[in-house]
Length: 254
Ligand SMILES: C[S@@+](CC[C@H](N)C(=O)[O-])C[C@H]1O[C@@H](n2cnc3c(N)ncnc32)[C@H](O)[C@@H]1O
Image (cartoon, rainbow, N blue to C red):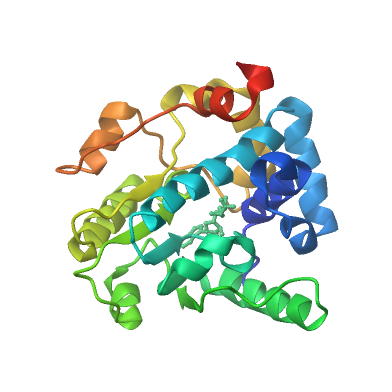
């Protein structure tokens, strides 16, 4: 069995370190000793990562909820990793359909850990049924949508958090084209990215050194024009830096 992505564990660790911002009270149960050690190594060069990792999840989640409030009731988390939204957020119960796509090893790991923690009472059963769909984003992902068999005439929220840089640009373009073919008008794609200039930062260099040289290289960097081109024909509603979003959520930073 292939090793699961350490980046997903490290980001769950960040959410567990700033629960006030992330509101992810379950992340702490999903961690390993290695995840903490990796996360601490990243934090040694960029202490702000705990808050920014927590905030990335919180902002995407809060944005998803604005669509749930508009009666969008289908949601897919693409490369969900150890995201815990359907297990803890009351608004998850308002969805009629919820799916998580990820590599088979991550899905197997997550299902195993969630089932065990549910038996031990550490984690609740999900508030909405979770359709886990093993998906490799470097391959054709249309089958993953077809397997779900949902009503694609209805809008769907698609979350792509912490994934755009881990797949080659050509694959990312294919993923967005395929997703666009299924989604009805009014469907948001919630997406984050690293910019070319971020390569110069100590954090990027540390990530590259700790996981990039081994299994999880950053492959794709985008600027605002690149995002516009990627989502050709779609409206970009918002494109903000995490340091800007932080001012909204964390008054100590404004
Ligand atoms: C940094 S983690 C992000 C996880 C989660 N979205 C979060 O924000 O915490 C990257 C995730 O992408 C998944 N991933 C990496 N390459 C992938 C691929 N080719 N196809 C599908 N998932 C992939 C990993 O398994 C991992 O769960």
